[in-house]
Image (tube, rainbow, N blue to C red; front, side):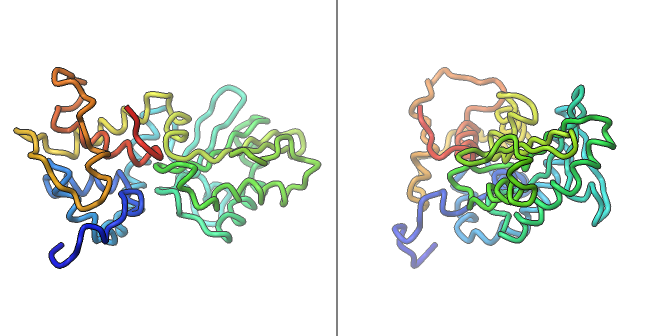
Length: 273
């Protein structure tokens, strides 16, 4: 940091950090304070090599806990696009998962749309149902921070299948529905909190964040002294002024509440009291 003025550094959202990578990295380094990891965030490329592997670890552990199964498949098969599956009455719920909100380009969006249209009938037949619910799930982020290539999956589906087979057009929406020979296919893009609520329920994201903090962050014996962060808005994000002195959530230590705010910022466009 020497030789650089703090004003050179942008707000936290500009660093495109992955909350799961941050937690696994904090565990490896034995960190207790946000200021420790901030120094490593600044050269953000440090975390890029961990992005995919962190996403895969989370996926493998979490899916079974919430009643889904991981899908193991070979390349160029009908299942190669699938990561998770759940049978629910006369519906088979399927998901492909991405570690972050900017993982797609135009070609990938088109290919995924083609895979969904091309394989939906086989997915329904193998599950013995006539209703497929498919999710493109993103482990963290918000719709606002998406590069919108994920939404293009829905547009490409409509173009590929043809408007007369479309039940629900995705215009001004993040989902669509279409039919293939009596089979209904619902497709939705679910980013961050929307994905975790779909996986479990409205409390799932909080459960995940608390579990990550408990397993990855060493509780501090004393509160961190007032810290001047280089990332311009990090101090505001981490402020615990709104937390009463006697507040105890029991799941995490008081010294870890800032980590909860730190992770939560990856799932919203701003934090409010």
